[in-house]
Length: 345
Image (cartoon, rainbow, N blue to C red; front, side):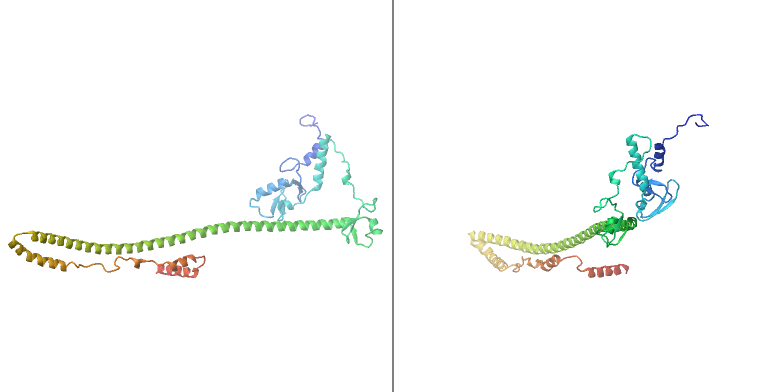
């Protein structure tokens, strides 16, 4: 009975008391295996401890400080983090027993029955002898009878506990080595991912530079093409103008000659002798002068040819065909330095 309230308080059952002791201080539920034990002897679900540690360590640095959520005791973690904490196998076994008891529907704790799997292993040669020693020479567990009378009588042996502790320590060291190796592999993977990213970025930058270089070459070729076309067009206009001028002169001379010929024909048809004689002398003189002047200036042979504008690009084509990365790098650098000096001046 509670003296302050006067109410009868039911004493908690052993199972309820055990369940309270098996509750994680982080999730407030029963421990979820694996269960880790801190140096302050408080237990935690390793999953809860890992979540708590990750929330305090967002950048996932190896090692660090872990603070017990129950007593605030600080634990220095190694590179394995929470996974380097020791497991509490005793608490895990108690949890298994507790769950088995709940499945049976009982409210009291009973010692679990030993199954055949929990029996100690027996020697295959001496059926009634337990395996209680370890043959160091043959690297195998055996029994005392094998050491005294059997195949291991000349071998070096030791107790199972000594070999167990030694191999357990060796296995822990192997786990540490694996952990260190895994850390190196993760670091290498991270570095290689960064290398891939750097290669992609550098490749994109070089593609852009290459495109700019070729765009510049295209612009230079287009500009030079325009200049050469302008030269051809200019000479074309000049030659056409000369020929057109000569054509005009020839047309004028031809028209004058046609008029004189018509006038001479009319004079010949005139039957008046006096008028014919008056006009004939002048017409004869004009006809002779016109005939002499019929040989006007004409274009020289080959005047119409434009072959001197033929562009020989074989050398440039060969140079462009051999255009490759790194060619003329020193020259480019020297040109850039010269340009910088000119800008400074």
